[in-house]
Length: 175
Image 1 (cartoon, one colour):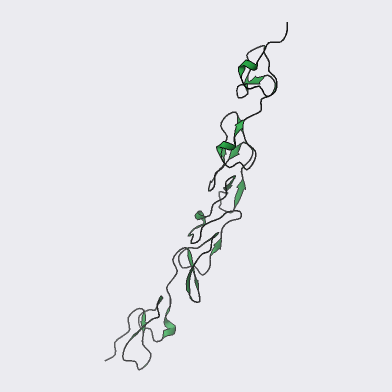
Image 2 (image 1 turned 135 degrees about the horizontal axis):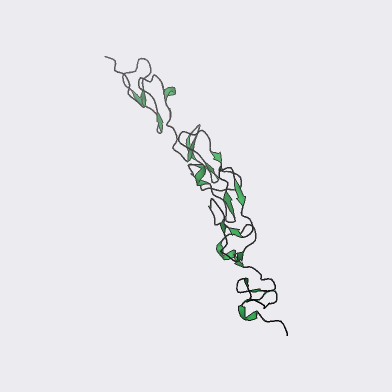
């Protein structure tokens, strides 16, 4: 009596038993030859090759069942085995564009740490150069004449020289 072969097995014509597919391979019910066996779909973070699933390299990612890995957006990086574009991140001083198409530079008076989706403004009265990497890159603005204490205005009728740092640097004009 002939019985059908189950999943992940096959039976050639005239065989008395079903044969298991090679390791890592699967087949549908009623498979008739080893050629019906194929590698199981790869999980996310991997891709299919002729010899089976291989982990995606750093700076790439893949979803379930992929035949290849996708390169992270311009300027971003990811670790090996990444599974979505969300695993790709920008270095400090840059942030990921909203459409996940690449990294943008942070402008002056802002900063971002690695992996940020936006740049953060420096605290009030502080400034930083473009591409700043952390709040520690923000410093008090150089004060112009007539301003002191983080560039606050000197008391009425008084002035200070450029670079003044405290209200004590404010003085009244002669006369």
